[in-house]
Length: 356
Image (tube, rainbow, N blue to C red; front, side):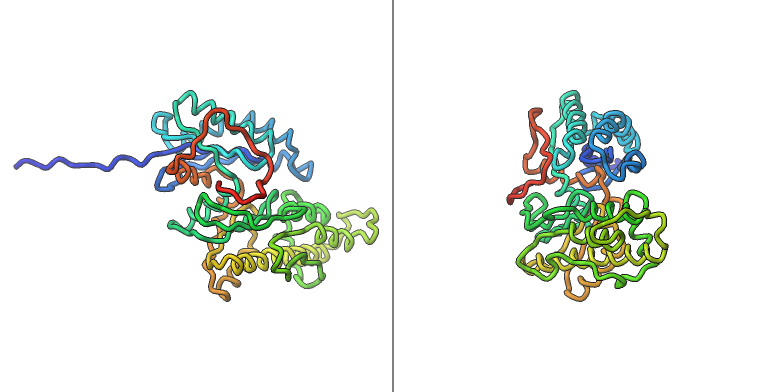
C-alpha cells in the first residue's frame, strides 16, 4: 500500500523589531501571526536614577553600548537566523533624537547587509497595537489613550495604521508628573511604581488636588502642571520654602501619594469617556507605561462596566517601552509602507491628523 505524501504548511514569516526611543534598548522577533518569539529589553532605570529622570546624552551612549548585544540576544532566544527574517522594523518617532538615531542606524545597517525591507514604526501607534496583540483579534475603530513618561494623548483610531490625534497634554505628561511628585515625596525613581506603592496605604480623599479640564468635554487635552504645583505647595508652602522629604511622616506621604494618584486617574478616565462620546465608539485602547498603574486599570474597568465600553489595556509586559509591540510593522508591510535608507528620525509628536 502506497502512503500519500504529507504536506506541511510553510513556517510563518518573521521580522526583527528594534526600539530605542527613550531609555530602553529593546529588540524582538515576531512572526506574522503576532507570536512574540523573543522580547529583550535592557532598562536604563538604574543608570538614570541618580538624576531623577532620563538624561538624553546618557541614554544615547548606553544605547550604543547595548544595541548589538540586545539584538543578538533577541535572535538567539528566537532561534532565528538573518536568513529566516522577512523585514527589519525600527521605531523612528517620536522620542529622544540621540536615542532614536542609534536604533535607526542599527536597523539600516542590518537591512542593507541582509537585503531586507526596512519598516519605520511610530512609537505611539505601537503602544496602541499592543492592545490589538492582547485582544487577539481586530479592535478597530476605537479611541486610543497613550499614557507614559513622555506622552499623554488621545487618538481616533480608525484602523491600526490610521490614527488621528484628538488631544494631548499642554504641559507635563502624566508619567512625568508621577516622577516629579515622587521626587517631592522622597520616593525612588521611577515615580509610577513608587507612587502606587505609597498610595496603597493612603487616603485618596485626604487632599483636594486640582483636576484640570476634567469637566470640560470641549477640550480633549490634559494638563498636570497645576496638579504637580498643588502638591509642591502642600509640602513646601506658598511660596515654596526649602524642606527635607526625608522628614515627612509616612502617613502624610501615603495620603499625598494617594490623593495625587486619584486626581490624575480622575482626569484620564474623564477624558477617555469624553473622547468615546465624541467619536461615537464603544472600544477604548490603553497603552504606555502608566497603563500598568493598578488604580488606573481598576477605575477604567469600573467605567467600562458602567458605560458598557469594550476596554482593552495592553498587558503589563507590553506597557513599558519594548520592541514586541512593533508587530504593527506587519500591517505596514502589507500596505507597502517600507522606507529607503534615507529615512530619518522625528523627535517630536506630530500634532496634526496623520496616518502612521
